[in-house]
Image (cartoon, rainbow, N blue to C red; front, side, top):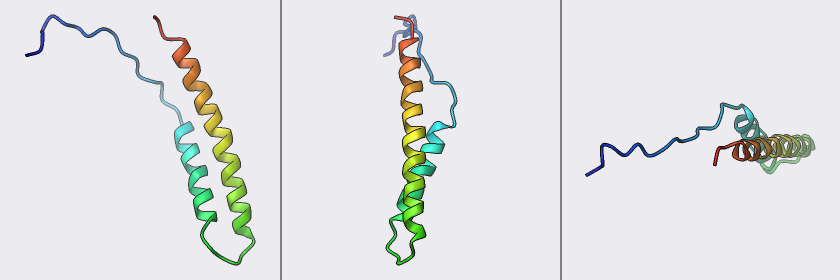
Length: 73
């Protein structure tokens, strides 16, 4: 049975962010551009998707590291 007097301490939830959504859009663009086709615009789609994924993915990781460093010990 669980101890009713045990509070378990404080816990941290990350702040809401649009960065995971933006990163997933970039990944979706890359995957959509990888569909075999003879059209050249697919290369542009992969390139744009890769750039979006890298930019927002790096920012997401930086924000997560900053939040982790700000946690109380």
